[in-house]
Image 1 (cartoon, protein in one colour):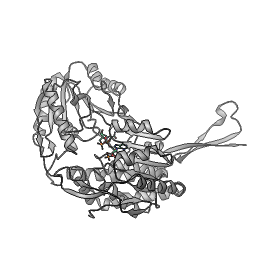
Image 2 (cartoon, protein in one colour; image 1 turned 135 degrees about the vertical axis):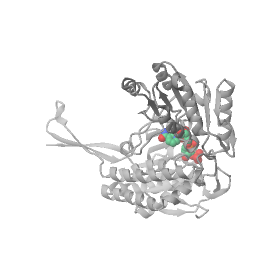
Image 3 (tube, protein in one colour; image 1 turned 90 degrees about the vertical axis):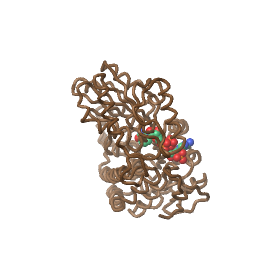
Image 4 (cartoon, protein in one colour; image 1 turned 180 degrees about the vertical axis):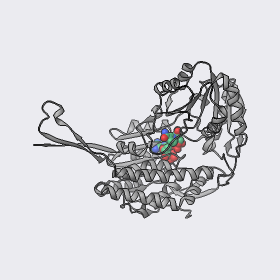
Length: 474
Ligand code: NAP
């Protein structure tokens, strides 16, 4: 791999005016040198995307579909290389990184299919008095330049969730990836270039959120902001975005309810996976477990047994289940939140300590629900197990959160399942599953502080297009 990366502007690879070392989160070794774009370099990307919007907007659906299909195929050919990049820059265990690449291939495939399916609609104008004598239809047009700002935790697939629908809908994009995970973004730009995307339709600009992101969110030539990241940044951007269309995919402290009578052995693997996959740095990571009191000890024992087997190590080691957290600040924050819960009477079932630049997978029991590990988003390998005796109370506990992305419910009682589906205040309810489940075509997004707007290619296309009405008077 070329150590010194270049910005991708207007279809050209451009040397940056200043550079920063990218360090591995695992051992702090230098992985690459990354351009830190200035406001002027960001301006060039905006100019190039704005210029490309007419050409891309006129590209027929079958050509947009073909480009996205090419991306999916080229990514498939280079899948191992892609997984290793993710692993290096994000300290994602290689097995998990491979899963992310497989999903990204699928996401571009869905985008290719959806490009051919964008629906226009006939409008029966004569349904209203005075509307007679007209033939009318509404067409979905590309909304304009999309600024995509993405987080570190799924650097390939969350980028795919923005580039896929944007290109499918005919919008040029400026991608600003997280500073810790620029390599996946440059890699996919190379693939788009080979896939036949017109020049300027994708621009990749790395640099500080406060410089690049700030410029993108306030520039009038940008029509859509699609942001995935923390609520703090998302809300700040929202307040500056004016009339731009916006999708905010933000954080959560996802919960699951386990009803009495559930077979714990059958679900324990899923609970551990949901809690600790990629060190808990997943927006729908399982953070709060509310289990019926009759099963509490059984759930603790089953999860502890499986968690004790998880191996901490180098992300590129095939045996590794858990690796470093993304930054030193995150390590100390997570450990301090665990200490806070301990001081307030929580039991540490396992973990709770530091290992290298990470934190060992941690199970806490009986956590006061107003302590940080419960009411804030941990974004680390920490889950807590609390019990309930009354089902309605469990639903109230899940809902008493500032967030609402997804929730899981395990029950054998259909009535309770339907009640939970109706009463849980989240973007997605997963019955008989963990909240950490996602496939890439389903509608996905949150309520409350988890944001608004939906991804899942078809839904993201709706967010990135404008409806135009055309009426013919006879
Ligand atoms: P983050 O710190 O909010 O950063 C996200 C992106 O915003 C990065 O590209 C970042 O750039 C940029 N940014 C930071 N400050 C900015 C500013 N002032 N103006 C414009 N852009 C700015 O989030 P993260 O730590 O990378 O990711 C973790 C968060 O993402 C968690 O809260 C997680 O739940 C959420 N997430 C949500 C979903 C979902 O679908 N709902 C999925 C995944 C992750 P820099 O890296 O350069 O600061």
